[in-house]
Each structure stands twice: as C-alpha cells, then as structure tokens.
Image 1: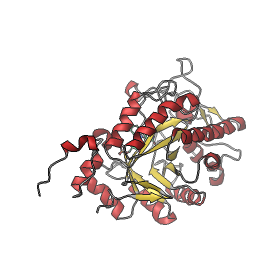
Image 2: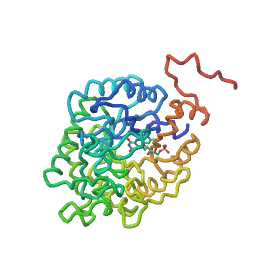
Image 3: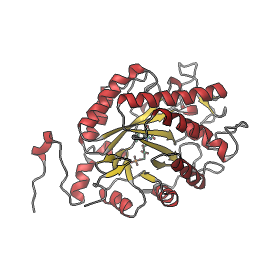
Image 4: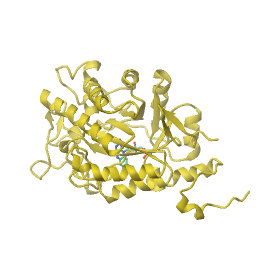
Length: 358
Ligand SMILES: Cc1cc2nc3c(=O)[nH]c(=O)nc-3n(C[C@H](O)[C@H](O)[C@H](O)COP(=O)(O)O)c2cc1C
C-alpha cells in the first residue's frame, strides 16, 4: 500500500490518509461569520477524500483579521455555522481542523482580487498591531506597537478562540506562526525590535508564541491535536533562520506540540525565495530528522508520486496541499488510482467509479 493513502494515528486521533487541506483564506466571511461558501468549499474537500481539512486563518479578534472578509472566532455567535462545517466534515469521514491566527501588522487589507493593499483608518480600515511600529510595506500606515496589556489581550484572544474551537467540534488546532503574521512578527528580528522581554534574544522573541501555546493548552484537551505552522526561514538577511526553526521546533516538541507544518517566507517584502517543486520540503525533513517531531511538508506539491516519495524518504509525515486541491478537490481519489490503489468513494458517487479494466 502507498504511504500517502495509509492512515496515521497521532495520540489516538486517526487520519485516514496523509493528505491535508492546507489552510486557505477565502475572503468570503462577513463580521467573522463563515458563510455557505465555506461549507461548500471545505465540505467538497471532505467529499474529495482528504484526511484533514484545516480551515483558513481564522481570526482570534476583529483586529487580527487580514481583511474584513476573514473568518473569525472571537464571539460565540460565530459558532453555529462553524459547527455546521465541522459536523459535515466529520460526517463524511474527514477530520476538521482550524488555523487560529492574528494578522498583526498585515491586518486591514483588501482581498487579493481587489488588490490586497492596506485599507487605512481614514478609508474605513482598522488599527493594526505588531511587536514594533514597523509597517510591512514601506509607505503603509505603521502598526501600533503592542504594550503589555495589548499582549495580554492577544493571549486571552487565542485562549478564548481555542475554547470556542473545542465547542465548535474541531479535532485539530493549528497555531499560525508563519507568513509574517503576528506570532511570526515576534519571532523575526526584522519585525521585532522591542527592548523588553518580548524582543532581542531568541528566548525573548519566541516568548509570545510560548505563552500563547501554554494558554491554548489550558483549554485545548491533550486528546486533540495541536499543530504549529512556522515559516522556517524569512529568506531575508537579518531575519528568522532555519537554525532558529530547528531550535524552536525542539522546544515545541518538548511542550507537547504534535506537528510542525513547515512553510516559509511572508515576513519581509525583500525576501528572495528560490521556488521549485517541493522547495520547502527540506525544512520539514531537517526538523523531522533533527528534533524527532512529526512534520508536514507544504508548497508546490502537485503530484501523487511526488507526495508518496516525500513520505517514503521520511522527509515528512503529512502532505499539506493548497492550490492543487483548489484545482482538484478529488485529488485524493485520483492519487489513489495513480498509486495503483482502489480508493473508497462516497456512496453517493459510487456509480461513477471507474470500472476495473484489469
Ligand atoms: C487562496 C490561498 C489562501 C491561503 N490562505 C492561507 C491561510 O489562511 N493560512 C496559511 O497558513 N496559508 C495560506 N495559504 C498558503 C497555503 O496554505 C500553502 O502554504 C501555499 O499555497 C503553498 O502550498 P501549495 O503550493 O500547495 O499551494 C493560502 C494559499 C492560497 C492559494
């Protein structure tokens, strides 16, 4: 049997195969409320056979949204629709996960198809917060540097969001500490120039992530899974490095994190990324092999055999797919045939199953 289609049990939670829907913002929410779009989008990928479906960056507070169309989980009123989504995913044999996020200095922007640029306060945007008052793009309005009360609020928001995630039925929380959003902004010396206990040394820069993690763990039961997505490198001089990612991952493993989802970049506008198929797999491999924690590989993985080889070579434990699953929600079914397997189809679709030719 292929590794890609074989199950993986982590702490008693079984993923039916190794294919994960990587979180993808849909910019289709209003006031944080998930919509029918999300039910259909996430639900289709459950029908398509992915083992775990991680919902897009879901904001822990209104000011933590990348855009005003992001999903939120900062109030109880958000829960009924989220519950509908998790119920549907679970009823169709997949696991529902949620990525908890705070955009930090990358908050208050337009959806990509409207240009993705900052919406200033004057134009009806909202205040962005960050470790230091340094804008992401030169010329943008600077974010407000968080004071101690602001940091305490961020921690409480993540904790409350985790408690709500439990109530909504998610089996996996992924903390978003990648792509230049708030938790990553604290990690990187390029965006964190604080002189208090949250800035400067490695220990200080990882402090907020550690405190958020501890607070989340107070309300998120050990039987459910906790992943952290990191940007393994900023791909920019003076930024967060692969060596720091190894050090951080070892600490996260010690603290009980189940898997590191290894992405990269997104923090510095002047980043230089050498992009090629599977270009981030090297980080998943190094972190897995050097720290022993489970890793997820993501980024330009588009073929069944490519995914299978990554798993067989023990470069990662799970394969996160984003754009390929937008092109083909049935990728897991198609991948099974390519790897000479007979996948299980949703009963409703069985009459469309290709007939055996051999
Ligand atoms: C439409 C879209 C939305 C995305 N939104 C998120 C997000 O909410 N959180 C996140 O961590 N990454 C997000 N990403 C990045 C993907 O999860 C993934 O890391 C990236 O696209 C590389 O994988 P791929 O080559 O399989 O697309 C998004 C990507 C796309 C294409």
